[in-house]
Every structure is written in C-alpha cells, then in structure tokens.
Length: 297
Image 1 (cartoon, helix red, strand yellow):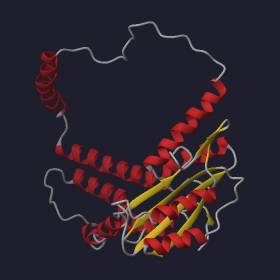
Image 2 (cartoon, helix red, strand yellow):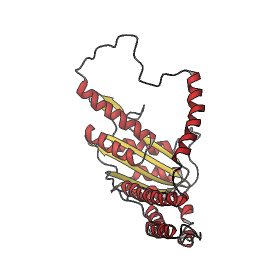
Image 3 (cartoon, one colour):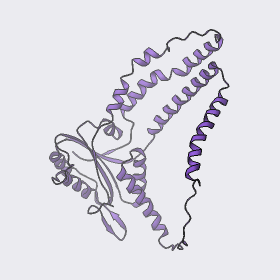
C-alpha cells in the first residue's frame, strides 16, 4: 500500500444524508406559506391538522441513525517537526522528512510499552502534508486545520504562524513594558452587582417579554414560519460551505493488526526528502472510518 495523492471532496455518506433531509425540508417554505395564508383567511375559526409533510419526514427518520454512525471511537497519532525526538532543529528551523515521519508512525505501532497501543484488527487512515517551504507548509496546515481540527495540527499551525512572524521580526528589539501592567478591558463590578444583574436582569427580561407580546397568535405563527425557512436556508448554506475546501494531501489506508499496519507503512512510498516540512496523522479505529476516508479520495 502506497501513499496516494488525494484532493478534497465532500463524502457521499454525508451528501446522501443531506439529500434525504432536503428532499423534504426544501418543500417547507412553499407549504408553510400556503398554510399561513389559509390561517389568515380563516383566523376566526381555525382548524389545526397534521403537517402535510409529517408523513414524508417520518419516512426519513432513519437518517439520524446514519448520521450518528459517521461518528466513531478511535485514536489519532500525529507526528510533526516540533515534537521532541521526532523532528530535528537546525539554524533554518524545525524539519521532519516524510520517510522519517512514516518510520516513526510504524515504530509507534510496535511500541509494546505504551498502554494505550491499539490491539486487534483496526481500520487505519493516514494523512500527510509534505512541503519543501515553510510558507507553503504553514498555509497547508492552517487550511487542513480549518477542515479537521486535530489538536496537534492546530498547535503546529500556530507555531508555524509565529515562526514566520519571528523571521520577519527577528531584527526588531521591542521596548520593555513598565510595571505594573494594564489588564485587558473587562466588566468592573463587585459580587453584589453580579447578583443584582442576575436577579434584576431576570425581572427585566420578564418585562421585556410582556412588552414584546403585541402580536396575535396568527402573526406569531407567520413569523415562526419565516424564521424556520430562514434557518433551513442557513443550515443548507453552511453545509455547502463545508464542501468548498481545497487541501493538498497524501493519504494511506489499510486494515489489519498494529503489526500488519506497521509493516505496510514501512513498505509504503512517501515523498522524497526534499519535502523537509511534514505533518502526518494516523487515524486508528475498530470501526470503519467512513466519513474521513471519503473526505479525501
């Protein structure tokens, strides 16, 4: 099994859930508008019936279970240039070659002294960023972290951003701050005022609620229908925005025991050593990594 070049794409598993939901939800604005108009015309004597899309929505209730199955328990093993005894530091900064990253991941799978080492059959998915320049490495790690917020990746992205800043500011000598220091702006209040804000604030909230009750039930239902339509539109737009990402990535995927996975990693073909800035993450789980494996294919 070798490392393959992959590009970002929205997983079919998530797309099928979205399509199933929106096949019903997209009809809500028109049906809600029709229902609201009917309410206005018969506001004197309204007959409430079951929602016209209720039966259609009930047929898709299984999508919740499908969505839950995309979450799985597992472990993430990351290697990067800033780890002790992993990367190496020279005058130009911290470096880690792809072949050393793969070798460390493989050796870690054989580490019998680690009590959290996985056992038995595992689904393994590896992601690797390998770049030859610090600027491109910083850009790729930040872009990938915005898609999948792996804690170690976020730390690397922040250190890279700081390292780039230090390279431009290394000849600047800032003046020392006089003591004592100003604290950041914050609310200035005592414990008594905190309680007054809590209890009297609750009273004011009730007054505001009573004062805002200037609408008839029909008007409230109309606003609720409009709000629901807007929220559905916002959710659909947010999901579609998740799909707009372009992260260059190398992937590795295999199934087996840790010993087998270590052997497959050592037999893989990572990029050349000229890519001296490397971040690699290995996802391990006894459950299929459906969403992650479809995210980059």
